[in-house]
Length: 314
Image (cartoon, rainbow, N blue to C red; front, side, top):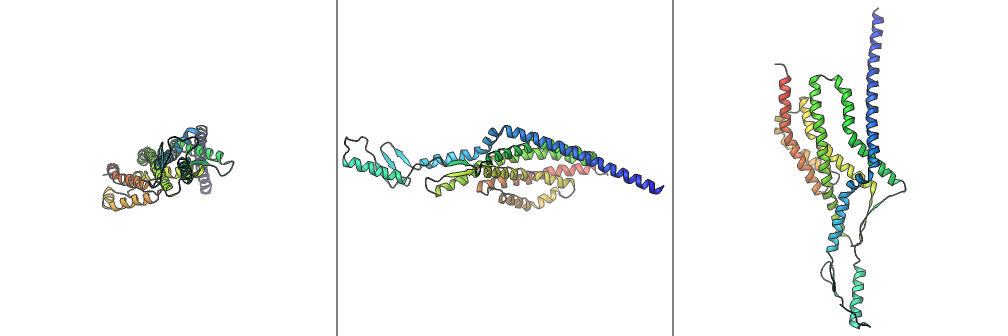
């Protein structure tokens, strides 16, 4: 009889485990469908999505082009080089036939223009092979699908985990998950604004090269760089969620955060160093918010501590 009961108990455990695995599979399949639907939407609206992603590079390239054009001062009757040392006076009118002096002036101006060619539009999106335009569009669609479907994906996993948690364990998730999504959007917004400064800083080095320098930007490389910047800022802005989660588990305290404030500065500096752009403005826009988030997490951790104190039996 004891052996029979043991076999039934093992069968019940196997059935319970199988049911949990089946439920997990259901939630994973639903989450995958949300991602696929989001990717289809992103693929269909590729033009406005890529236009928004490309806007920082396009605007900063246009500004750089206009600044380089201003370096050569042009007048109706003269040409002045960028360094201001060479000036060629053009005749306002030519005789027929032109005099020797008029001929020499026009000849000198043509030599000058040959040595100082007008700057072309020095930006162009290029592809390394014939199938890359499709892969770039597909990549953007998948990335956009992951972003817009993330709330639904998180919801599916929450539906799987919540039944196994106690009410006291569910409370942190109800607080941290919405906060995490909000901070993720804030991080992406700051990262997008940072892209303009990063592109301007990188393109400023074009002035070190001759006037005819041209930038041929690979579309896939730019998309990957853009995604890395958004991901870096989105992850960095999760710092309050991490600290509050540690407080719920009793690993982090508000007094410890105040006492070890130097660690906040260290985290901010490391975040700036790990920024994909690695330009001074990106460092500042990463370090500054991380410092604010670290010290702003202290009152949030205090709220968590008060909540845990109320739940503990007296």
